[in-house]
Length: 381
Image 1: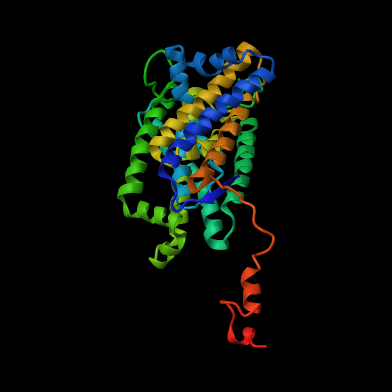
Image 2: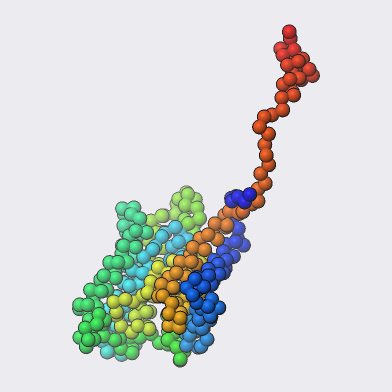
């Protein structure tokens, strides 16, 4: 009989293999789903996972969609290491876009060199301020940051909707809920010709290295890791829990805000009612698939980006439903959680043997008859 047993120590090999197992299980399940939908599994898998990467333009789109996922997940991963659960990166991304986009609209057609840097700084500040609300409520009133950050997502999205329907709506936009287009000086430069990948991806790579150095080589990063691994030890050492909460939320808000301004100043080029198809929420999966490590997050963001591209390719080529992307994302998270169980547990085959209903009565009989096992009291007449 198979039984789950706790390991004496977490399995490092399983921690590395878990995302790979989850990805393979996702692919196998995808084959079965394509068959159930009446599609050729081999052709569907090719269109979903291979066709988007057949051209340099497709590779550029892979990097483009990986950029906001990477930026959001890097900040979230740092907070998750400290047990600070920021679930609202989507809202912080939106506020970063609003702050940075507002600067672009204020600048108008100005071609000043400092316009784009000012937009980036404003986007970072916008994300930090939105995350600071959750940090203040958590440290001041002990509210749950999961609920607060999640509810702030909807407030940010409603505020964006108000702006593009009202004061920021383009008078020449045929009544569409969008702002006027940003000037060329307020858009992100491209990394290479023939694609839409911009400097945002480069920012993500730089940020991954910076956060690795921060978490591994600085005292503040060490505090965050200790707070996550051993909260009691962190309290005994005098590490401030409130300081860790503020630091984790501000950093994750800043990276999400940067993702937001990179989107509106990059492929979108204006303020719209919908800026993100859910990058902030998908980044939670990216952070865990990447094992909360900056390098792992970079690789996981590419995988998640491929799911977005594959979903779009499947819709156009095979008339697959638009929900197919979310389905694969959910499968990946489900299998990852299942595989993670075996980091701290293992399956063991336990043999069950039949037990006798009653213990042998021979020693008792011998004792009662004055035999070798009898006590003086038992052997007396």
